[in-house]
View 1 (cartoon, protein in one colour):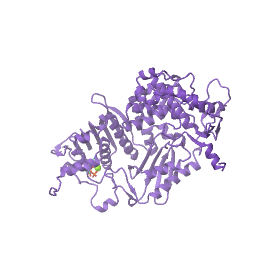
View 2: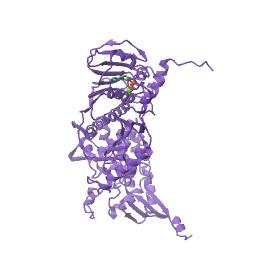
View 3: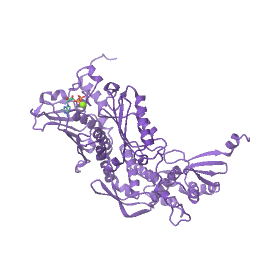
Length: 596
Ligand code: ADP
Ligand code: MG
């Protein structure tokens, strides 16, 4: 083995950079924290190409004296901490003194700053090499520019995803920080490509309260519907807003937790939130929640993670109980008309008189037979990416011959399950899961064959969307069009939806669009391929358009559902992989009753 030597500072910085700076979003987060610690009224964030080409953050905070600029970009130099004891009660967002040094190690970083009454100066660090402090005619406050992130670390740069993916992460970092600080004005601009024009994505004025800031980020409509929650056990307080059960989401992306102005992740608290909604949401659906915790500084340790995205609580079980009881009591007491049971859907108010001319529910009807010749399918451009199921349609026919005969009597129970007598026993079907599965397969086959029936809306629907979702619509308008939803920006937060797939039945275009965007946001952030994004859109439409638990069905509808099931391969699982049915074999029953 070689001799032990102390590492040069540049190597130490490079190692630290690996922990602190993972991608442009981490740069955005660290620079925003620095800006906030400077006590600003306003912060402007500009990104180019998802932040890979440029992150620029401008604040009007206290600034840095020219003489201290070299220290600001030096590792383990900070103005926020003096003694180890200070670590016990951290009042600032930063304290490790590592961010600027780490970022400067793996990019070209320029910092310009001026204090009130002082002279402005700038300093550039290029791949760890510090330049000279130069006079600069900047305004009071600080501007930090980070260009060519990982330009000098090819291995790291190779890990960066498409600019679009980096952009969603960076925008998420912005959103979380802006949520935590409603008293500061923020803007976010993005220039997606070198040749494109920059676009203002967020413009958030100082907000009088949290609800207004949530509205600025996610739309006033959403913010207005939130329910306020508050609880206090003497030492720990939790307060904030949660969504009504009927405003559930496909993902947990609208679950935000904060402590001491700091967004954090915590699986146990998320579990408490989900637990509070148990029985109110379909399984797999996620509630909306914005919660902040107030507790004594000693009761929480923020120094457990280099990027400070996790914190440790002295008494996590106490937080769990507090969240659970705060939310539970909200729903039980329901001061704002929240019902314990999700509200009945409008279709239930209508008489279910049969026979009908128009179907009451968007039940799939398989006549005329939807199966195009397999050769036609193979020539369709989407066939490849839609996978084997689309090609196996002809096989359904044979299966149908066999199994339709096997389906015996079917009845709906508790407005949510369908019980079917089969050759070998009894099957209990989850009506929503099954219908979702059937609709999804139909969507998929129709898109693959190019035969998706599109229903133009007589009165196009106006939908107000939060800024992030507007971006998604711009980005994916073509794909949404192929899935039957023509969506166009209308100015401001509004888009116009002028068509939807006929398969979606009576589900409103606004509901479909929201669900689809919810899923697209998550999939796009994960860097999913275009084929997976289409699939996510189809899943979203199927989920929204499917009958729900609690929807009473007429007997013909029950039978249609059971009959249609035979035509779908693997209909025993919904698209999420949850089972759509449970089987009790006659043998099992006989054994239970000691008949054998
Ligand atoms: P930390 O934030 O943990 O102290 P950083 O490397 O992020 O470490 O920043 C180093 C120092 O530079 C900070 O302690 C602060 O004094 C100064 N600084 C950085 N950004 C700003 C800013 N936007 N405004 C004022 N001072 C800043
Ligand atoms: Mg910092």
